Length: 298
Ligand code: GDP
Image (cartoon, rainbow, N blue to C red; front, side):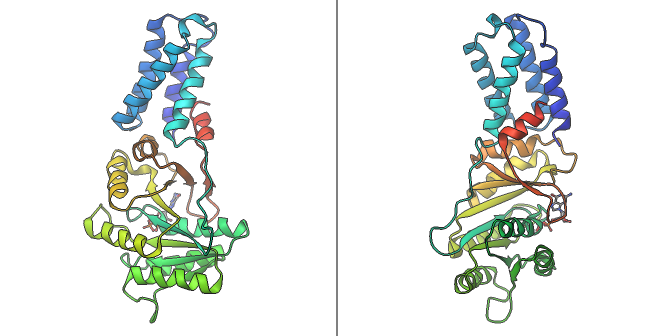
């Protein structure tokens, strides 16, 4: 992930290293090379434009052609901009002041929501919380059963649709799940929701209805980093249809070019909060934009 992007950017900057003073033309050429690297990595055009304009502006303000080690300065500026487009400083999850904190997961089918529910549940448990996973994906065959297996593997309780708690109605399952959490003193509820292969109106409405029923503290939009150029339109559709407060990049262990996933935070204004890096329950980490920027520039 980001390997090619990282290679391209570092080589664009490496050309400048150890060369002492640089002309404006040389600085422009290296910024143009970084721009091409971002576009080739599928970063969305508006994001690339903003990124490049910002780097140019900062480079001009720093009077790079006057300084002794301009390469170092360019790396610093690019690092700042990469960090910014990935969502800036890492923030904590919004937790409820009273009653259980509700975290709703949204995204396309196959994005990795159910897998993430288990990871998030276990991570919460490790931090001393008492989480409950709620199976409100009634669309995909076996999604409920999959969540039960994931919950078992993570050692986290699961609320499944059964007679009395909303069989066939994902909104009712979510509502009764949160009510159950309140009664039983679970302090975090992770609501898994249905995703289709493509964005559709019915899916959006269902997710919006679940949102309205459970008033989540966080809505995490899960996106497969391998999705490529469709990432931005998909994210925008979810931002408009349901809204979300954070992004989770899944399948970061794959060999995606990564740029599209990299654009999502920038386009929607919601920070990347977590990274999913494999199929196992422990393949999960907090996402730190500045660390990822450092990795790209390494
Ligand atoms: P959902 O439809 O959004 O609930 O997606 P799932 O959680 O069922 O994930 C779809 C597929 O992707 C499953 O086969 C998962 O094992 C796999 N998967 C999920 N997250 C990751 C990840 O971070 N890395 C890899 N390599 N596979 C993942």
